[in-house]
Amino acid sequence: MKIHLLYRLIFSAAVLLSGCATQKTSSDLPSDAPPLTSSAQGATNQACIDIIKQSEGVRLTAYRGPAGHWLIGYGHKAGVKQGMEINAPQAEVLLKNDLLKIEEQMGKMVKVPVNNNQFSALVCLGYNIGMGNLYKSTLLRLLNKGDYAGASEQFSVWRKAAGKVNAHLVQRRAKEKSLFDK
Image 1: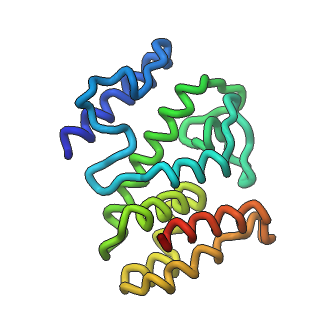
Image 2: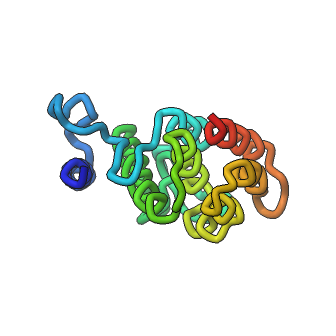
Image 3: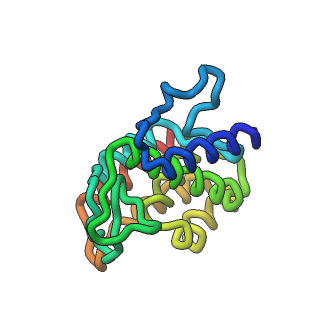
């Protein structure tokens, strides 16, 4: 698995460094190459990716997020500056690289067995609220004690933006909770 992760990281770095001029996609990889969304720690499933894409939307020009940070693509933050522009394949690569990082961190944070849906729901939540917030959360504490039902109920806690309940976040948390409960 570590060789597959290394292969994907090298591929992703090459695509980013090339500016996606060749606009490589997973269909351009050798047929025996591992899928771009798996990792040694766990694999984010398509349901998680769909929730992120529906919730974040894609923006190819840098924009300010609710917390005032510059974002681009599907909510990518690292290294984004005002005026930055990317194309759709670059947005996909940024999302997949962000998910790889979260998957690795999640593999270290979760101390109990979880199924793929639970893992993916946690990745989706961590992508949105930040891994530091998830690390300090009651949700993770309950989960690591084996209280899966209690952890599931904690998704709804993360529904506020700027101190106010946000309808969009209520819907997103309901989708994540539903995925976690499958």
